[in-house]
Image 1 (tube, rainbow, N blue to C red):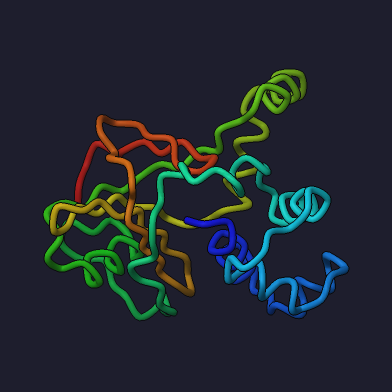
Image 2: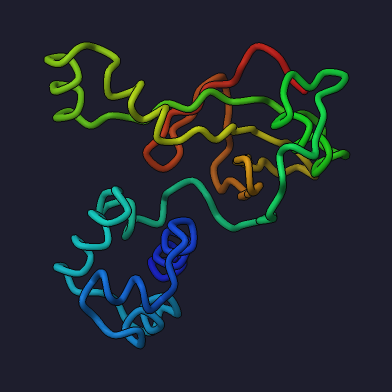
Length: 190
């Protein structure tokens, strides 16, 4: 993803309009439009502000090796309209199974935030695992690795939407780091 695509993605995930983001960053809406369309780039101060606002690193914003290439599906859903059945252990499993009926395999994933060194030290001092638990409460989404048509998708399901993104790097083995998260396959498939 380009820097502009990432800014737009983080903005829409946060539910912000271009005007609202511009207001938070003390820039014009036109600047946001220019950045999102890759016709300009934010200066270092604005990059820092964007990274702080969306709680990501500047490296994640400017690095093109984030592991995710493009959005394949992004739909609103109502989780209450789905019922678990068959191999589905939850309503979230049922959503993915319905949206990807021709998937070769669907692996539920366990997500854990990859802590940097400073966070690991703080976590150890406070109580090992505290930051991971806090992060888990911050993101209650269910994640899945879907293999379909020789592609791998990272799918995120919440109570209100499903988002699937094509992976640009292969998820081999049981673990993979994508963005700033460590994903681990569960021992079962859907």
